[in-house]
Length: 267
Image (cartoon, rainbow, N blue to C red; front, side, top):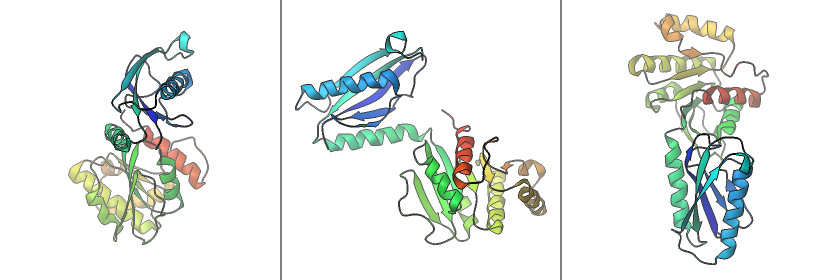
């Protein structure tokens, strides 16, 4: 590790390009993360590198606070005021860097979407990839062995479950469920398990099923035979994905689904 400056949005008034806690790490020749881009970020990087150039060793706790009015003088029209906190991190101070990263994850975890994704096929993989760098925690479930790729994003945990619908009972409360297994029979059992949990606990805010209106008509009839009411079935969304995004490529479907989920995120 090299000497660096850890920059966070400490607070703001009015409009801000990022939320409190958004971070950026600046070294002499690299930048990781973002506090919003534009002239705000350009000036923050310049200040950080000027600080790095002036010192060889400084206490890790050394901090600076810089106030930015996001108006004409900065060339941004957000109309707010942002305070950036800058912290010097010596190359040897890997412990504090780990702690700062952990604090950032903890601060944002309450705002992250909880997603339970059933199905490790092409669309499932595309959705995981689309959500890899977004504020989401993904519980990825499949009944097949060795279906998950080795190089998983940090926000993903996998589970092998057979029968697959058994995993529904242990989902985190508030999970947004996406159902796209390799089998229509599995899909039906997962939907039924989700509806049963919603009936009993009321903690599954979204049940999304991949497929066509024809598929849902068939499922609806079979679920009615299992005793689910019209009101309960109205809790299922099928097809999934934001309306107006056409195309059946896995990556296109993934973008539509990710956008639909982000509309439900509480910020």
